[in-house]
Image (cartoon, rainbow, N blue to C red):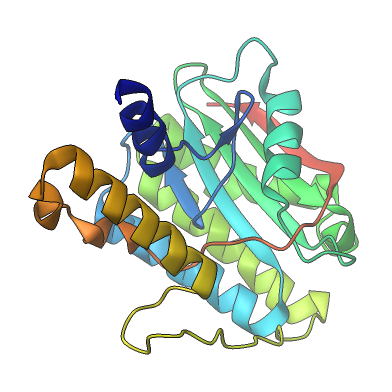
Length: 229
């Protein structure tokens, strides 16, 4: 019985991590707590607009440290684990900040290297990103760099808006596919047995979440820029 309980809990709180590299679910992932919710919303709005207009996928990740790999390898592995960018177009971009190490890196996918070569990315970072980080103004720095890169992608990349196929839900008011609904029912029944009916207090709102998740399976190009702050 205890083993079954642990199994069910592991399903519910399964971390979005492959190995030691986070699998990003949203445009902004702040593991340190440097940003307020409204600041995250502002930054994600830029990323969302870039995706809607070009199909390019941008993500921002703030971690405490990147050891033992170092920021370069950590950025590449996180990029690959998440699959930033559309498959076959590799039009993803990751802005990574390592807080305790005072390091940053912008990892650029193959498909964006034509409009975002290393020197250009480094110049953008030095002009409107690093000065803010040095002043501990993290939101301003991240927003300005995201906006500057986003404008270049929209103006120069020439990508096309993604063709989004709306999912069909068996229960219109419940945004779950058949297999997701089945998992919920199985967990509900099992937990109900284990808790003797107290499952009705279970917070099913945890199946909701923020928008902007689910990246497309692109690859990193190994290009970009890095530095200290």
